[in-house]
Image (cartoon, rainbow, N blue to C red; front, side):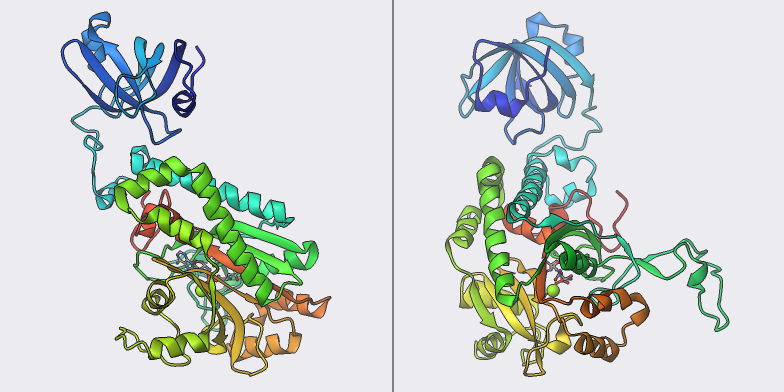
Length: 462
Ligand code: 4AD
Ligand code: MG
């Protein structure tokens, strides 16, 4: 018999029909005559209840129906007697696909800590919490494609392996097939990368932006959406070594168009999640964060504050607040500063612009003042920086000067400079940290809990 999806059955129950469901047992309870089995197939945070009349089945076989086991249950769908359930199944046929021995299966009880669940990343998707999180991850990814597709931007695939360092922060993972213990050496005694797989030094990309710009200079508006890698040893609740970034890049956009796009985009995907992942968001709000839905609605209902770095520093300096890191013009703002502005001073998302050029990347458009660049960061409550972007420097000479000042290698950037030689155009773009957005939408507080298999320092086993 054809399998029904549990989400469909609960939303629109065909009462009186014979149905077949397949899934994993969440709980089994009951007494001598009947057993109540809560079955979940991953399609929704809600489980369907199957009522088993014990006299109708082989008691030995039924012993295999324990928490975690995978089963097929067929039977009549009837209106549920229990609260909060629309329908339940009166089991007439049961098949056990896979047992889960109660002595070994780690997910016996409810309410395991998130820390414990991180240690069993291979099983945690089977909990209600992680089911909800990973369904939301899917909805958000879909919303991102839908938004850009509607805007007429093209999904442009940028490489994961690259020879250039986009952010210039030197936090890249090497990609090499050379014998690490005994690499070939050149005349100067240095590792000879001409003998490596690509004939040059290569890394895992920190951002698809530079190649994305090439796409924008041909297709007009593009976006990338893929994994990016940073070897920064920051063991914080907001950093991953492997994370997903969404990077639109648009010809003829200036910094103001870029800010408008970032705000509209974030509101679109948040609203999509509220619409299509409502059950899951409500579940997470109930379990972890009573303010979650209010916070999401607040972002939808309010205009983001637009603030210059200079004004931001002044507000922070006059706040009377003692920060761990000092605030002065030129300082790179820390998460404590960003969160003070967003959560306390304005109590609203903030887009900050006009940063000192020293603390931002080489490609940002330089302002007339010679000191600041047209960079922008979108700062969110509970998260801090969720988006970083800028209008790009289009002037060949200014860009080259900056690359030289920063001692960056021209060998790996000549093609990027070529865009400024041939039909250069004003353009802008930004990068959204997909897992930071996930933190905001789910109310989770540790970035390790919003990606199925987190990669962090000392953690890549599975
Ligand atoms: O601000 P970032 O470094 O900007 C760029 O990489 C630009 N090339 C983007 C562009 O203009 N196309 O990174 C962008 C965003 C940050 O705002 C943050 O949300 C996220 O990526 N991010 C991280 N997320 C998780 N773990 C990390 N280690 C992250 N580093 C950055
Ligand atoms: Mg940034």
